[in-house]
Length: 69
Image 1 (cartoon, rainbow, N blue to C red):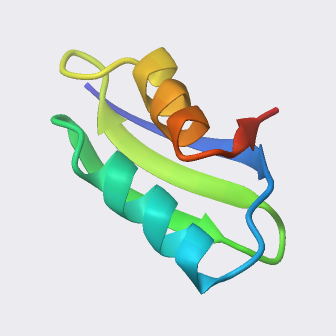
Image 2 (image 1 turned 90 degrees about the vertical axis):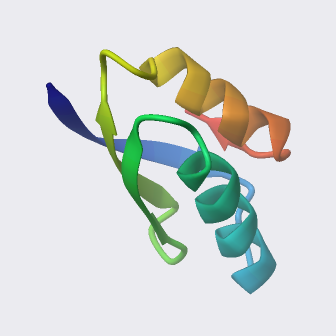
């Protein structure tokens, strides 16, 4: 089953931040699409919950140095 979530992420301020989050989350098995909205501090993620959990996605963003709130 495909899930679509929007996460609030703090600490993103530039194009590098966008690339960092989109690339790291996008590499996870089961993630179909990642879109960072820098201005609003939101990240849209489409993923297959039987392959990857929301917690793993959040941890991956945290590992890049940003805070999921």
